[in-house]
Image 1 (cartoon, helix red, strand yellow):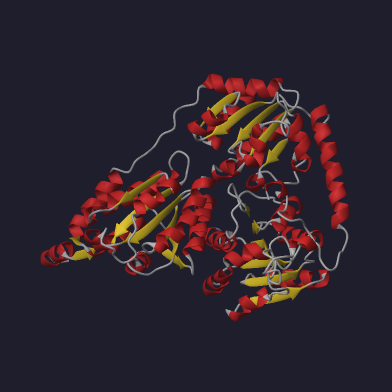
Image 2 (image 1 turned 180 degrees about the horizontal axis):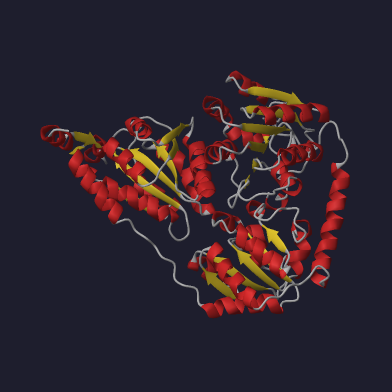
Length: 574
């Protein structure tokens, strides 16, 4: 290139949209989820030109759920792009979901022109203030020269320490500002050099010694692990720890699959016994919140000693365990395994504690299998769930990613469906969020293209984001959505006769949907494949055909409206 041409190219101008896209690409972003519109349409187009794949949704809420799940599955920040004002507000669902589940997500929203803020501008909102309760860091780029630094900050902070949500605000005037190519390159280089690196404090070896001593001296030890361990890719170290010590293990719902549910030391089917009688519990990447009964009696023994492994010091200080180990789950387990290797111990399969859990597990599984063996038509929850379980297991490896939401559907599925590989279960999570299903499906298909994605959803959960089946078809994603259709939230009209009163007593019940809703037709309307099934043969056929095709499909499973229970297993809360 001639000198004058080089000079001209360096003096050429780029706008804020292009600089944001360049920053994202340079700092490792490969995917973005969102809804375009004023003022971010050009930003999305520039990002695509620079190799960032943009997955366009119908609603920011679903796009946000997708971004949060993408962060969990990949370990990189999932990026959500929204328009200003109401788009930002809609996006808060995904940002807060990432924050509460401790998954890395970055929400980027356009905002109104800075000079018109406070005057009632188009979609005006103080978005930085709005997102603060739902994020760990929020920043506004007030000038185009701040863009590279701000992009680097939100991407780094989303994954540092305890992962979570970060927010970047991009005013319209900043997106329209211009800068020379040479100045942009200088700013990008400076931002890359200045990227923050957060280092964890070292774990004291004496604390590792204490943890190992507690496990070794325990009469009834238990290892509990959750999605934090899954995020840390700790499955190899967990396997080594469990199999070298012979200690039974209990995964939380999204920890399932780090070790196979079929493992002989799995205590899931003997959960009440395991947590009720253990005397030392090593809890790795799982919080002692409502999902684990806060680690308190009567579910847990009053004398249990918790060894809590968490990346967040504040979490350990909150829970006040017998011993806390602050650090990445995989690294902490590596240290524990190294210590045990020097002084090995193993319970053995004839150990009274191992035998007690094994016996209880076998008894409970046998009882459940009796129920599963029955072909009940009209379908209850158990019969179709057994058929789905067998179909998923029949796929082999790589195992499908299971997305599960609903009350009864998710609760029964958690007990029946078998997880054999890590990070292959996505469900309502820490918040018990309904409506995550289709967003999670899309994220899973994008993050793990080698895997089939199978969603098992209640009709209520499906309805939150059902129109995103069009997104499945548009991108031709290998997702099969199975809808348990029982005509409403928990089921149809379950009111007692005395509850049907008042001036609007002829209205449908608050829990009721249209009976026999043709959800499969919605998929067909967009060019996907729909199935309506009500018998074992019909369901088996639909699963076989759709799994083989690996194309977008909805299987509408007709369920007895009186099967299942109101509020699922959370009846005491309703």
